[in-house]
Length: 163
Image (cartoon, rainbow, N blue to C red; front, side, top):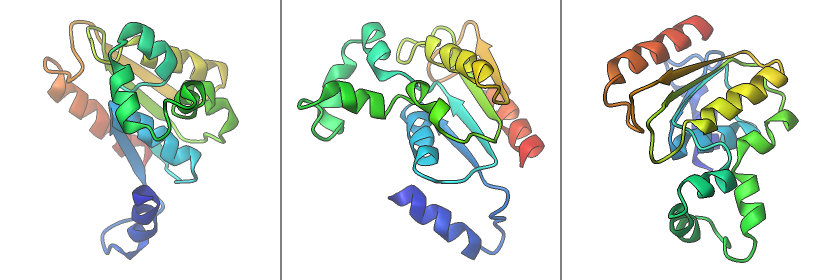
């Protein structure tokens, strides 16, 4: 797993501080960030941008993603439900020992990954008493074209505050 290899490499990088590791994931990278943490990668802070947190529900919003899942998820056709659940952090984040803050950023006009993913995850984090912040950009899309600079500033501030 490349993320585990990177996590093992951090202590060998002269300017890296292995005690101050943050993770940023956008879109599918957000899903992969949650999976990395589920698989043992330790972080002090997480930022997700336009992250898909519930793949099955996401299919009702964007059914054409079924084609992507068929191509990218091994053995997807044999057990779709398990494959989607395994990649849906909303459904299992309560099983993790999350002791780091999470920043969720999403454009409300995102047609690729609906903002409900970040909203539902924020509600779950409230339920679990996990430190987090949700930032929604009302007129923005999946790529945060309108608020890109603001989002980058929010991300930088988040990591400066929590690392």
